[in-house]
Image (cartoon, rainbow, N blue to C red; front, side, top):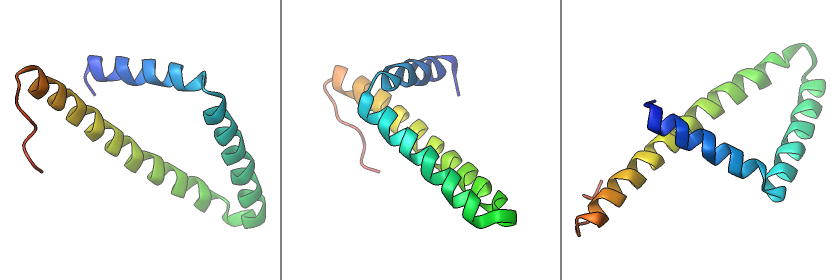
Length: 85
């Protein structure tokens, strides 16, 4: 990730932390994750592996969304549109 992208993701994270609905969902997610891991017992590491993979995939998607947003903004400023994917 380039410096600008990293700065924007950090700024976005700071902003989202101010959102009460976001915080509520994160708290619920943590609560459910703990319950799932308790029920999995010795296999609870599977839950962590799943979360790591899911979050890595989501991170890739967010980086692509960011890139598309940048490209779209540049295209809009030039009076053009993004190429179709």
